[in-house]
Image 1 (cartoon, helix red, strand yellow):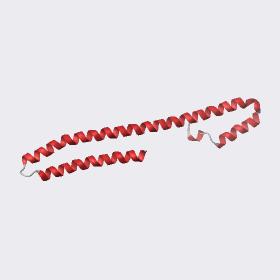
Image 2: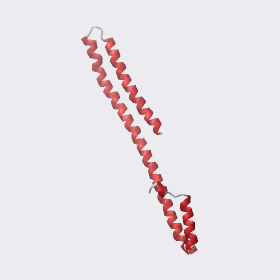
Image 3: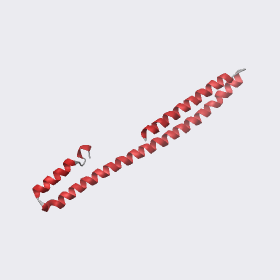
Length: 122
């Protein structure tokens, strides 16, 4: 059902005009038809709300999984990035610090993006 078919003031007026034309003997049919349209409209709106809530829940859990995966990968990359400069050079501390600042920056940017998207959706 499209939004143009939603129940509105015009629908009520049309039902009343039909009743005036047909008389009281068709009241039950008019009421039943109108009630069915109301039920369809309510069901459609409820299903839209349920679908929206499911998308939000799915997006939230997907963002947390991606953030966790990025953290694990960052630690896996961080170990060699720490060991190689420290072993290969006399003073590898500046290189290690720059590498870890980059890793932290990437993780922080991703977390901010995930949290920003979650806030906009709610």
